[in-house]
Image (tube, rainbow, N blue to C red; front, side, top):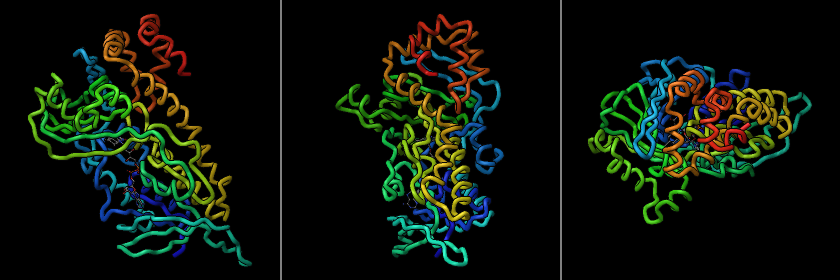
Length: 416
Ligand SMILES: Cc1cc2nc3c(=O)[nH]c(=O)nc-3n(C[C@H](O)[C@H](O)[C@H](O)COP(=O)(O)OP(=O)(O)OC[C@H]3O[C@@H](n4cnc5c(N)ncnc54)[C@H](O)[C@@H]3O)c2cc1C
C-alpha cells in the first residue's frame, strides 16, 4: 500500500490535515485507532466562532447545542466580573458530531479512512527516484489493523494523534512536555444565564481554572484543569483532579446551589501547554495536540490545531508530490504555523504562568480592579478568546493603565 500522505489520528486536526492534503492533490490515508470517530470525547466543546470557521464549517443544529456571548468570572471571594461580548462569541458543540462532520468532509475529498487501525511504529528510509521519475516511499508505518500487523508505505506521515502522540516518539521528536490534567462532568445544573459560561480561577483549580459551560438552562459541562505541582502544594493529601472536582461541586457556594447531583457524562483528558521546539523531521510532521498547539490561556486546541492542520496538509502534499520530504522541505510547515500563531501561544504561556501563580487574595484584587464600566467596555470590545494578547495590549494603553499597572505590577510590560 503506497500513499503520498498518511495521517495518524482522525480527531479534528487529523481530518482537517487529511482533507487539505487531498485538496492539494495527494493520495491520502487517515488512520484512527478507535472503531468510531469522535469517541471517547475529551473536550468541553466550547468553540469560538473563529474556530468553527477555521474548520470551514458554518454553525449548524447538526452539532451545535448552544451559543454563548460572554463569561461570568467568579473570584475566590465571590465577586463576579460580568464580561458581555454582546454577540455570539462561541458555540457549545457535540464533539462527537463535530468530529464526524470533519471526517465526512475529508472523505468527500477522496481521503481513505481506516478505523481500528493503530500506528505502532515507523521506519524512515531514503527517498529514491527511479528512471521514470517515480519516487519510492520513504516512510514505512507499522500499524495494527483489526488486530493484524501491517506495513504502510508513504512519503509523509502527519502525526495528529493527540497529546500522548506516539508518532512523535517513533519519529524521534519530543512529545508535549507540559500537560494539564482536565476532568469534567455533564450534569443537571440550573444556569444563571445560559448565554454565559462561568469561570472560577484560584485555589479551586490551582494553576488554571474551573468552568461551567451551559448546553441549555438545565444542563452544563462542569469541569476543571490544574497544574499538578501547584495542586499538590495547595493540598498534598487530596490533589487529584477528581478530588478538586468533588470539592467544587459540593463546596463552591455558587455551584453547589445550582448543581442537583448525578452526571450524564464523564470526561478526563490532558491539555498540552506550550508547543515543542521541533514539529518536523524527515518525512514526519506533527499537528494539533501532538505538537502542543492548544492555547495555554483557555485549553482550547481546535482553532489553533485546525489552523496548523491546513498548513500541514498542504505542505505534506506538495512535498510528497515534489519528491522531497526532507526535514528542510517540511520545515516550511513549522515556519508558517509559528509565524501566524506562534507569538500568540508564547504570550499565552506567559499569561498562563503569571495567572497560575497568583494567590486567591491577589486574584480577588485583580478581578476587583477590572470591575469598572470603562475596563469592562474595553474587554467587550477587544476580548478575543483566540487572541488574548489583543486585549492585553489595549488594556496596557487604556485610560485605566495606572489602575491596571497596580493590579498587574510590571507583568503587562513583560508580555510584548
Ligand atoms: C477536559 C478538556 C476540555 C477541553 N475543552 C476544549 C474546548 O472547550 N475547546 C477547545 O477548542 N479545545 C478543548 N480541549 C482541547 C481539545 O480537546 C484538543 O485540543 C483537540 O481535541 C485536539 O485535537 P487533535 O485532533 O489534535 O487531537 P485529538 O482530538 O486528541 O485526536 C487524536 C486522535 O488520534 C487517535 N490516535 C491516537 N493515537 C493513535 C494511533 N497510534 N493510531 C491511530 N490513531 C491514534 C485518537 O484516538 C484520536 O481520535 C479540551 C481538552 C480537555 C482535556
